[in-house]
Amino acid sequence: MRGRTGAHPGAHGRTGTHSGARDRKRAGHGAIVSPPQEYEVDGIRVRLVRKRIRGVHMRLADAGEVVVVSAPASVSKGEIARFVRTHKSWIEKQRAVLRQSPMAQAESASPEDIASWREVVSACVPALIAAWEPIMGVKAKTVAYRNMKSRWGSCQPATGRICINVRLALYPPECLEYVVVHELCHLLERGHGPKFHALMDAFMPDWKERRAKLR
Image 1: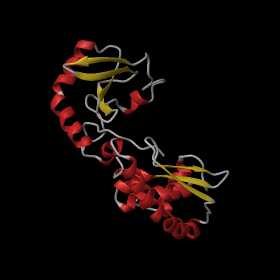
Image 2: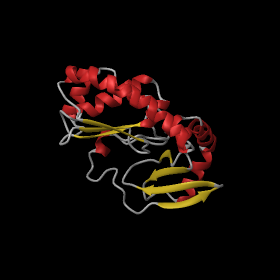
Image 3: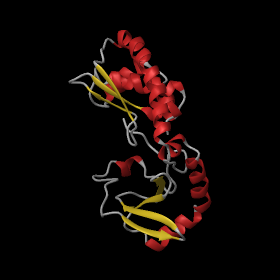
C-alpha cells in the first residue's frame, strides 16, 4: 500500500476537460506517449507528461515542489504555460496545505522524532493485531516498524511478516488500525483486486474513509 502526497484540483483530482466513457475505452487511452519534460513557468517547476488523453490535468508531486501536467500531444507548451499561470493561486494554496501536512513534517523529522513515532506505533500495533487476528482468521508471525516514504505498510504472505510505517503516529488512530487490517488482509489475498476489496468491505466497512485521511 503506497502513501501519497499531493493534491489535485477538482473533485476528481483533475482540472480541464474530462474524457467520456467512449474515450476511456479507446486502446491505449491514458498511456504515456513520450518521456516527461521538466522546465519552469514563472519560477514554477513543471513536469509535462504527454498522454493519450483529452484535456489537460494537473497535480502536485515531490511534496508540492513540482507541478505535474498531463496533456495530449496536440496541446502546445504555450498553452500549458497559460494553464499553469491560470492555476497559480490554486498551486500556492495547495502548497501551503502540503507544508502543514504530516508527511511534510515527516520529511524534516529528526532521528529523535522518528524514534518517538516508532515508540508510539510499536506500542499500539500488537494490541490491534491481537484483536483482529481472531476476527480475520489469520496469524502474523513477525512485525517490523520502519520510517517509509512511499508505503504505509507491507506484507509478505509467504512468511507472515508485516511491516508498519512509523509515520502513522502522525495520523488519527483509526488510520493505524486501517493499515493493520489492510496488511493482515494480505495474508488472505495477495493482490488489491475485487476479492481483496470485498474482504476489506466485510471486515472494515469504513476503510475507504479511513484511507482518505492518509492523503
